[in-house]
Length: 239
Ligand SMILES: Nc1ncnc2c1ncn2[C@@H]1O[C@H](COP(=O)(O)OP(=O)(O)OP(=O)(O)O)[C@@H](O)[C@H]1O
Ligand SMILES: [Mg+2]
Image (tube, rainbow, N blue to C red; front, top):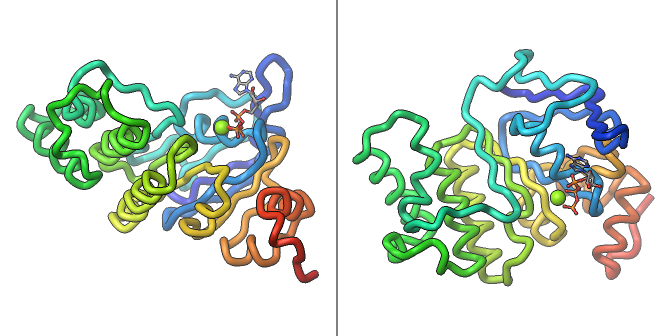
């Protein structure tokens, strides 16, 4: 289903240009981080790819096709957990796949082990901490073995230790062969995780570069200002 090619994608709810002509091509390898200021359209872009928003103009092609051929999973910034056990929540995405009950339980137990929550399997998901909830949400998405994983600010409310735990899970998911497309406000995280960076501002992609180049020599003025604002000690860029 790769490359995913967006051409002049417009999303204009009530006439307001939220996505104002997004051009972007994403391949099937590695971790692509989407950066940009509040309100730039990052979450909306992920929702469009997840099929949760209908666009008002332009096109999204999945290796030339109108729909993705393989599975996609999305983890929202505030994941909704059901008021049941951690294990039930981990297996939730498997219900529509028609797997046997033992297979669902096996896969749920497997992903809980991978995110370090095996010991909480029988607890109520309501009692998890923020970092644990986020790890459970990742496990739930991972369990369906998506080819593309969309993550919307998965560490926004987490402390450094919980953030590191989530980052190592994301790396492992990539190693397993899934493409990861993720938004973040955390530039340190972007430096640690990203293979490439998509910088969005005012509903348009201003820059799409390999991560090392983005941080050492951002091409667009918007990206330079953004990096300076977030990392003021990195004041100077070579021209
Ligand atoms: N369905 C919708 N109808 C109307 N406006 C919307 C809709 N979805 C998003 N918006 C608006 O589009 C703009 C971009 O929203 P989006 O959530 O994508 O921003 P973002 O880049 O993810 O910002 P943040 O960094 O704060 O998460 C916002 O002003 C938001 O209010
Ligand atoms: Mg957002």
